[in-house]
Amino acid sequence: MAQRPPAMNLSNWRKSPYSQWSFHHVREVIPTEPIPARKGATSDWQTDERPLESLGFEGRAGETWSLQQLFQATSTDALLVAHQGKLVYEWYSHKDIEHLPHIVFSVSKSITASLAGFLVGQGLLDPAAQVTDYLPELSDSAYGECSVQQVLDMTVSLDFEELYDAKEGKFVEYRISTGWHPADPDQVDFCLHDFLISLKPGPGPHGRVFEYKSPNSDLLGWILESIAQERLADLFSKHLWQPMGAEADAYITVDRKGAPRTAGGYCAIPRDLLRLGELMRNAGRVGDRQVIPPDWVQQCREGGDHEVWRRGGSITEKFSHGSYRNKWYQTGNSHGAFCAIGIHSQWIYIDPLAEVVIVKLSSQGDPLNAELAAANLRAFEAICAAF
Image (cartoon, rainbow, N blue to C red; front, top):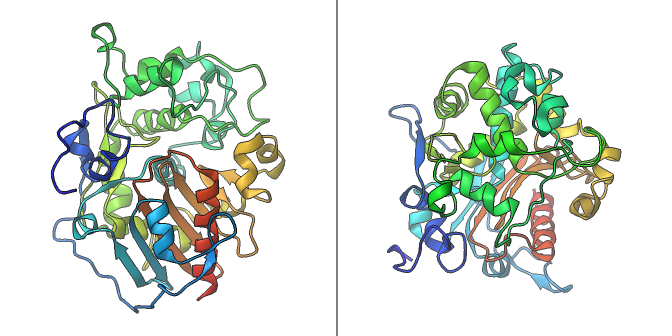
């Protein structure tokens, strides 16, 4: 789909068939802020091509699938695999996908947390501190009595439901505040920070239950900007994107007042997302440069509280032996794989034992599909087993 669909607008850009164009043309739909790569940067991947087309794994309803069947079922735009730092498999639904930044939705949460890890390493952010130590204006909100670590681990008790198909209510109000949905005339000045301040606590205590609530990750972005007194896009470019060796500019969506959507608005080319996965696989190191503290990455891999995760209910079933720490999922499988996941089937999957990183970007019609998510995971495990 090369041309902008004439019927696409701000209310339907996330829906199929419009998503097949909009997910890699987001800056033509929503305001964004650039995240520059280093000037003159180029692709420096070593390659060692491996054929994976014949790989078989359990797909839907017990059927044996190939990767092509997975691609079709999940409207895959790109699948890239690196093994021991070499690019071994690269597939795109069409040639434009290789060079156009693709939105990663909630993979953004894990990306934002990687920048938080850098600031922790610099002594600027203390995860044990209260949110209000950094943002006192949140004292009367749900975040008035919780820690930064609870924000990082999604254990904030919040009066908010993650309802992707909602037509009204708090979730639609949230999307309007981010600039992702049309605003009524009396809502145009109500932006993301206003929404975060308006949130009230849920019925339980903070810290006891994993509760997946996207506003927590937008709050994290606000905290990082407040600490550094710098725009998040600039922070990210200077301290992560360029040191990581990104070959292309990324960008992030912003609301009407310029607040970044750090819960879901990052857009980057597939190869640079693979570089981010490699950075995490290598304990935060690129060559001889330590970009993210190794102990932070170790927490992302192994530091979650399984009991807190288990109390999270149905959302935790995909990783029955897993956990969640610093906005990364720990699968709990025998390889100790961990991953970042976004709606509409966006993935960064890292297998430390097999030394494999997988990036999958998609325009899947369903925001969430548990059956297809399970098929993705089985495909990833089969890919890793092949190495």
